[in-house]
Length: 438
Image (cartoon, rainbow, N blue to C red):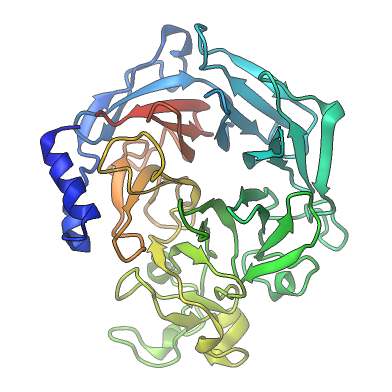
């Protein structure tokens, strides 16, 4: 770490820098570098040279090629686990020891596996895996687990096979976290775009639930969360944070003239409005809070911090069912339709300063927008106030802004034991390793 960043670190941790000054010290993605690709992985899209924009001094390479790779976890030995919901498998990239980075099958026969968390209970190390209809844990030992020691800790979670859903469930992949309180937190996302039926189900399908580590004592922790993807606790605190995918095809909710827009737009799906509304979300998930969906939507028109709500035209027209003060404001907005999926805090990792005091988020990218957005890795510096600062691009280039063509879609991002960041991409079937330099 150079002397400049040592000074920045001292001043920041000493509390002398404002939020804007901290942000000014975070190098963004502005240098194009060639993606280093081993010869055995040089198939489409790496059948030709590819470049990504990263901070100056950073390097990015292909660690492995895994079709439809989703969420990641790093084992106690430093190896990499990759969930593959499409095949029902969790795969394993061995990084520890003097071996090539080969891909092995760790376990199969799962039902849409997604989130994974390692956690010690007594003398045992468990790997918790979220499936679409349950949460299982497996005793983990010597880089292996077996179906014989699967313990189902939470059962009967809703997915497309559940009665009453007609075989349709828009967000059935589950995501999990384990807190410093030794509790298990599970996201149960909505089955729909914006249907109040999800708020009346059991379990509620727009919520985060809390369980004991063995699945007992279910508690509804927070609601009004359409589709929480990444879940993580801010290191050194009991604060659960989540990134959230908000609704699509929103109708214009104002019945009077607002600026250049007249009452004739009321209740219509207007592309100019849908493009930027509602924003996706980065929230501190507080016990007992309701974050609005599907009855209210955060309005980003005056900034992305602690946004006021607008009533949802389809479900809460003119605040007819629930007033705005029924809901907890969103801590930080992410541009609409960016589709944030995995995220990680970096405070207790070996990534270099100044990135160590912040969070990284993978944006999978948009579909409900006239021009694409997302398709990148972003960074939120953490402010002395205990909140995320302004979004900074960390890795870009999977989307060509001019042609609107894409060749990759980031899903998850996690730090490894050496201070690199691992990125999964389910569009190209790639696991990348990003080294930010020291």
